[in-house]
Length: 398
View 1 (cartoon, rainbow, N blue to C red):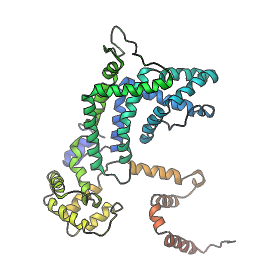
View 2 (cartoon, rainbow, N blue to C red):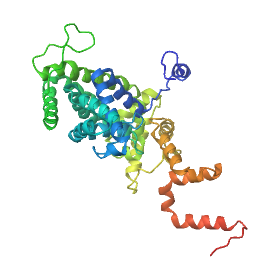
View 3 (spheres, helix red, strand yellow):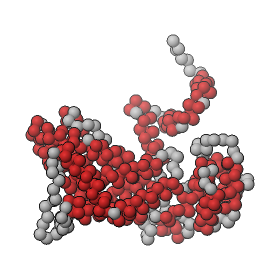
View 4 (cartoon, one colour):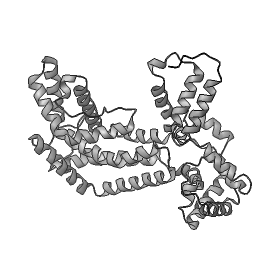
């Protein structure tokens, strides 16, 4: 599907030269995080965190030994960041719970608890956890915004560029960054009453990092911190390139954005849109479009749909209308579609499993547009009762 050489993308772009392939922005960010698993220490750390959380949650008797932490779910991206953050926050309590279970549980529990305790007590695991938590805090706000209903893709793209620049800066000052991470790891080690040690090295490097180092900071900077930053930086640059920049700038035509932007910046952005989509005259129309919405007395523009804007621009803003039509068909993310799956799960419970298709569709529409229903509650309820009363059924009302 996404293949640029022989996939569906290639076939469509042979006919439609200006067509752009959009991979869901949420999925792309998740792929950036998954690319970090190429660093073996990071992959092992995440696997150990996942196994430890599952170990406590799969038994009611074990849950009292550790705080409740969200599952590290691969499909729920926000939960993934929360799991790592909470695991680091309650690390000491988790390790204490594993130690108790390694002595007090049954045979199978003692064995698994001892194995997990040994894994989380490793210096490499603690340092890797500190790295993941530090950079997850940068990526989590982006993941939340990309799944929001009022997505500002342009600002989000700019923020990702800021993160990429920050990661590059951390790479240049890796020595100071590794020292800070070592201090964070030492706090955890002190709480666990363990000593941070250099991992064992082999005489011949085959399957383990054998970087020559005189200190913990130098060793982990070479073997873990720098490879992690290189992987994160290259993934962000590759998966969030600027090839869609003209398309993203179409979102500036929405009233919530256009009233905030200055005229010179708007002109510059619209010139880029004009060159890419061959919309001559859109720059001057966009300036009038901006003035039109600034003069509006309405204060809240967030709930205005793109379809309503197209109707508004139909008469006097033909180029803006074309740009809005392109914007309407542009899929930045699949989060809105996937929210409908959650709605279906809430509506179609086992008590309603035998309902007809029409009724299910109606209930789903009510659930999705519940704010609209609340705003017209009295008239809406009266309309339903009138419609219900039209049926000549005999009802025994008591």
